[in-house]
Amino acid sequence: MSADMEIDLAGAAIALEGASNPVVEAALAAFRANDGRLVEGSQARLADILLISCPLRPGVTAEKPGTLYAVARKAAVAMTERGSGRIIFLLSAAAGMPMRRHPRFSMENASILAGMRTLAMEFGPKVLVNAVGVGAVEDETMVSGDKAMLSHTPVGRAGSIEEAVAAVLFFCDPLNTYTTGQMLGVDGGWMAGYGRNF
Image 1: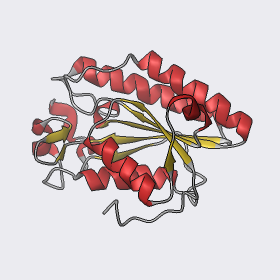
Image 2: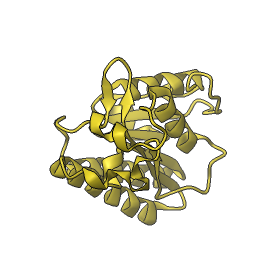
Image 3: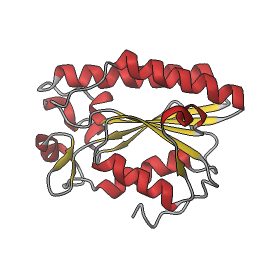
Image 4: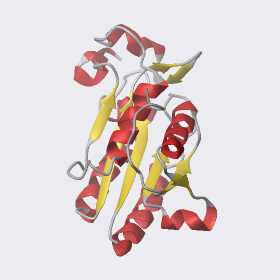
């Protein structure tokens, strides 16, 4: 799906902050397929789009939420000075619906979500700041979430990497100019209330 989804990034510079995972790798491939160019090192400060990758599975070591917020805020300041930009946080759906069995993971993601919304308020309208909240996603193994989430997912299946990437591309699409401060849940309906037993 994501490789076929077309948006016109028109050579936009895209930077990554945080750890890589299969969703991030697929998103970077989709950016390249849509005329985005990846920038690293000192060039990352010139990014038009910043993708911030947070751990998608409980038990994965995360950067401190305050560190991610500081990186995003610094990028937002630079984007504002240049006139525009987009920041997309890739995080767990547990940001919006805590899991009893993973309290620390849920709290860390919720704090990142709160920081994302704060940045959206502070830097709008020049910088659009959003998040993709990824639920249970499987490839050959669990890429995101917890297998127990599947028994509480109304669509009755795990999501795919391509479905998560499509949401990232939505937030990057130049035609999307009115969405900021939002987390789009790609979780098969898990956050609709089915997560309370975790």
